[in-house]
Length: 295
Length: 171
Image 1 (cartoon, chains in turn red, blue):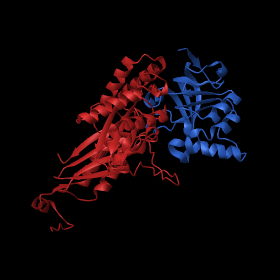
Image 2: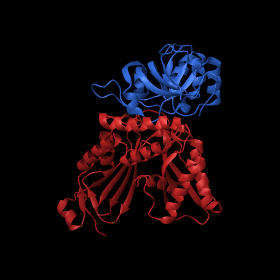
Image 3: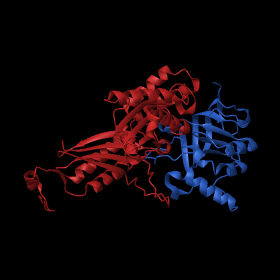
């Protein structure tokens, strides 16, 4: 067993094939990335909104879509937040097992969130006392350990209106593919106008209850509107999108053809006796960023 | 779609579910925590932070205003979270509610009883709505941060009548 001393320095890092990251640099880069991401709706989503508007013949839904598209333009032109709910900060961290840090990575990330939200709304409260922490931390952070020495962070600002509408269903395997589609459709039907449709759907299938939920978030980290590389999963995404849009909820619940703009699904192997299905509902105000460090 | 320009003194009973309106006038922001305090004050017989008779409440918690700005981004939040508090406020004279999403049957009944309307703004259109706010003043509960009660003056705020004073709904 190799023992790395606590006072590890750059030379020792090279000796052990480690890459040393400076926590202050991580914090600064993350803060800048978050600040920029919060002020801009993903251009891929704006394109999906414009396509939906061009196809929409429901007058009320068109009224809403016109405002959403104008809002995203106004936000960009005026350097304003497109939505006042700047969300809970979610960080999906992929860290190489040969990465080393000159301090606490977790603290560096939380400080990046704190600074990135300096001008944004502070929406994080204690679950029981409801006291606001005042700086939008703590962020929700997930780590994935991989070979190599890279550090990669995906940031997602998750608003409450849509997050409250997500859900997990523990189906029996006999329900199969049709059961997955109807479970997702039922969650979207119950959500109605609350999650600010048109929405994007992240769907996690398989694993365990918590794994499916995490997959439903990871699905939303893919490029919006891009189908899964796996043909069977891509077909499931198409069928879910079609079933959801047949509900007729439409933009802001006002009817029309576009309840959802896109559906992204991720799968994981599961138990012979289980078929977990999780849905994360994402509003049209998609604000996220992908940051790679150490380059 | 019929579209009307309305102000605080407009005869809202003439509006019908599905009508589009542009609202110009005064609205008070209040969301979860402010509703809790206001209904607790009302139950205790204490005065509310503003005269609720004929008033318009906007369910919103803006981002902080930056230097030189009137207000931050301020789109509507989900109205349903206010449903438990709303009938009491309607019975005290609240006339116009602005938010997003559905309302409970109890709220609709109280709206019919008090001839109030529920208007929806577009959820996530916070920068657009911000551009229609011409004045903002603090009214109450500053300790609640973004959830404090503020009096906004708005010009041409685009809204849709979701539930009219007869209880008819488009949602």
